[in-house]
Image (cartoon, rainbow, N blue to C red):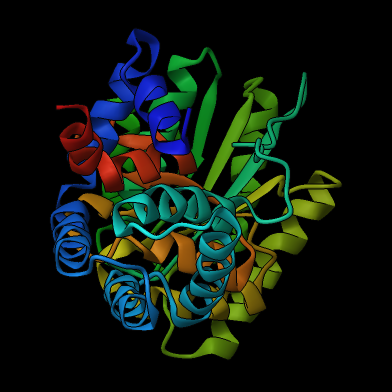
Length: 331
C-alpha cells in the first residue's frame, strides 16, 4: 500500500473524520491553488524529466514552502524517482506527499509533544507575537481547549500597551469561563505576569497563559521586555515558562518567517501557533518554518470558531493538501 493510500485510509476512518474534515476545509485555498497546478503539471508531462522538476519547483515555491525546503525536496525527489525507477508523472504525487511529511518531521521522532504540561504543578505558557496576528484570539481558544480537557486555567493580560488588548482578553476569558488577571493599561507587563503567577498559585490553577506586548518597532525594547517577563517567571517558578508559543499569521507568508526569526532571537520559542491557515493559498509556510527555523508548528487556525484551533498534524496537513487528488484517484 502506497503512502497516499495510507493517508486516505487513515483520514477516512470514523475516529479521524472530524480532523480530516477540518483540515480539508481549512486547507481549501492552498489546495485549490496547489492541487490545480500539480494536476496541470502531471497532465502536461508524460515523463519525469528536468523540465518537469523545474516547473514543480515553481509550484512549491508559489505555495510558500520556502526556497531552502523546496531545493531539498526537489533533490530528494530526484533521488527517490531514480531509486524507484519512476517514469510516469502520476506516480510522483505519491513521493511528493511522502517527502512533505518527512520535511516536517526531519530527524525528529514522529510524535512532537503538543504542550509541555507539568503534572501536579503549575504550567506557565508565554504567548508572543506582533499585533494583528490573532494572538489574543489564539490564547482564548487555547484556554477553552485546556479547560475542556479538565484543567483550571488562568490568563494574565500582559499586553498592556495595545489599546483594547486587556478588554479583548477579558471577553475571551468570559467565553472560555476562565479568570483573567489584569492591571491598568500602560502598566508594567512583568508586574501583571507576577500577579498572574501569585493568583494561579493561590487558586490552585493548572495552567497560566501569559499574553505579551507585540510591538516590533523597536526590537531592543521588545527583547528587553520579554527578557524581563521571563526573569520574573523563572524567579517565581524555576524551569518556567514551560512553553513559549509564537503566534504567526499564515496569510503574511514570508513576513511570518522574518517575525519568527526576530522572536527566536528575543526568546526561546518552543512552538508556533499559525493562525488564518484557512485564509491563505500559501499554506506551505508551515513547512518553511519547520525546515528553516527548526521550530515545530504546534497549533494551526483553520477557522473562526472556538474549536477551530487544531493541534498540528503533518499527515493531516498533507491530506488536506492532496484531498482532491486522493478523491480523484479513488473514483
